[in-house]
Image (cartoon, rainbow, N blue to C red; front, top):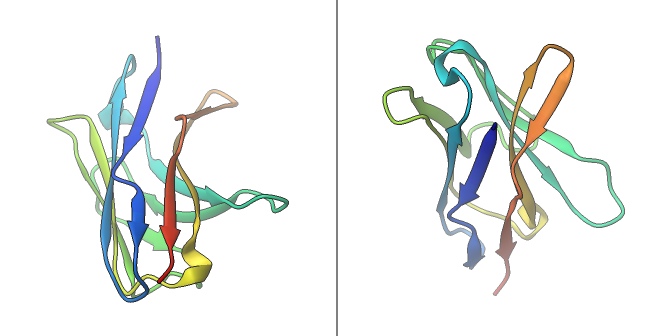
Length: 116
């Protein structure tokens, strides 16, 4: 069955960096664009980054542009989110996502906390 498993979250100081990973299985990974979202309590889930099937095109939310970078390794079924210059407002649960035939698929999420 389809599975997305995120990892790499944790506690980091403001200005620090983290790299999130998402391991995909159960579907033809290289056929689908991938996305990272984040969510904080009481707020809607926000799309943070997007990458096309071959990685040729990426897009970012304005709030993270210039600080986050999405990438993928189709040979390993992995999607990554490199986060730099982290701010307290980046604190959230981060989710990996793809969309297939009208259905959104999500991982369990990984918590990122930016605090001194």
